[in-house]
Image (cartoon, rainbow, N blue to C red; front, side, top):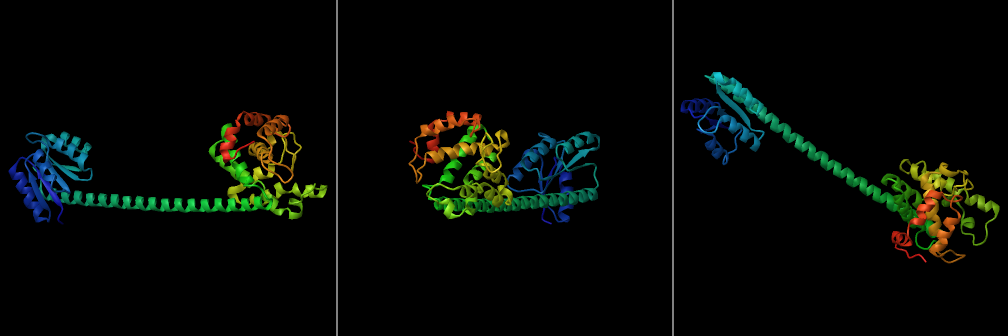
Length: 348
């Protein structure tokens, strides 16, 4: 067996009796006459089981038990007590002792109890080892899943960004209009106190707001002159086209709502559904303002970028008609420098 057992008792006869019997059973026995000597032995040799008398000169077996369990909670401890000291033995059990035997004891009972405690300890250690191994595997697999999800999320974001840049390039946008309005949207939403999850949904909606233009012909989309009524009807389809594309993708359902409604007006004169006031999702109401900011402060084929003051004048003029008045007021309270920091872009 080779398990190490420490016998702590001030009576020589008890130590020799237990040592002889347990050595014969295949255990390796060590003996100590008091608590201090016991700890000296355990400093150099790990024990599987300690058999200790309770009443000894100097420190008691109860003190040995208390200190021992603080050092090694897995060690098995068998307490030996006199017939009149069973209450103390029960107190030892409450402190972590695994069992107790009263003097005078049967050596057969001692051997059976020792075997039982050793087996229980081995099972407990094996269970703890398996539990630690399982936790380690779960942690490793969790980390692998997290890493894979991060890689998928990164790939997904990169794909969306590349698609949006391609659409911006199709319209000959200077820089990336979609990325700029995404950043502006996050700033305004944060100032409104919108929570992080909804800000992320808004950001995706802003980034993809013109995805529906993929269904608009180049002849109409890139026409340098004024559009006719039929061409305007075609242009007005792009929010619905974008919604139809993205609403089928589970994790883009919320952004799709912003895409569908990003050309609605607070007074109900927008498109495609003529929603009014708070019927319009708040993300779309936020987007309406930042889209105007970027559209007016960016170069267009028919004009150069307008100064920031022109934007504030337009927002003030259209407050309550095109724009939600409360959001417009918050927009106007944000200084130009904060908008510039958003995209590292100087506004006139």
